[in-house]
Length: 302
Image 1 (cartoon, rainbow, N blue to C red):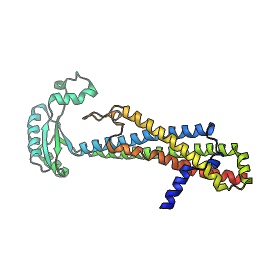
Image 2 (tube, one colour):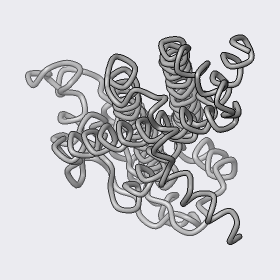
Image 3 (cartoon, helix red, strand yellow):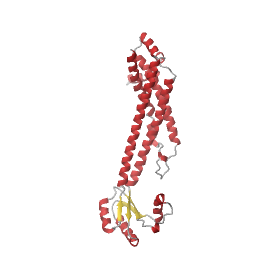
Image 4 (cartoon, helix red, strand yellow):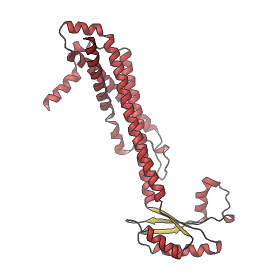
């Protein structure tokens, strides 16, 4: 443990002589910083989108899981009687906390987004909707359908299963796409840093030959390149993560009672902790990519 800590401190402190083999500024430095910052920014938004999808799907799933809808389609002269009979059945069904028939105004509000505010409900055969709220483990849907079929022929029970399952499946696919996007961002970061490291090694081929002539080993030279590019990636990723966090904080938050996806993209609560590993992970990617590139280039130049 102490040896690992000492090696980490030594790596961060670096070696002044070895650091001279890597140009502190120039194209490769700017490319590494820009790549790390841009990829960290994209990672922040990919992570935020994935978490927002999960939150929204969980909220919708919970709401749909605790509610059901009963639709009664019957002739106008029988609609009131069948509605009362359905309410009696629902009130005596275990697992149902509350059942109420929607008013004409509420049904009008449900249909307005689809047909406009001037829909004449009186002239159309609109079915009566009954909202059901469950409690505990819910009710026996099969048994309830059998009772309704016998007592309320015009009733159709919708327990929202066909809506909830596709929603959960879609949320899972979106989270998988978010994870895939983050992996692709990491791979792109590794590729760009590898190109930058190879460019720096090629530009300093003469310096490397001189170091070898005076007895420097390849491990010594590799460590200098790895340290410089790792710290550049760490700095750039920290800046990109900070910028991404600020942009997320400026986005409008999700208002209570709204299910708008676009107003809930920002992070909330402990979700902000997911941003902390981004700079270290970017540095780890740069470490591995630069180490591999340096070893290959030094073997070719030997």
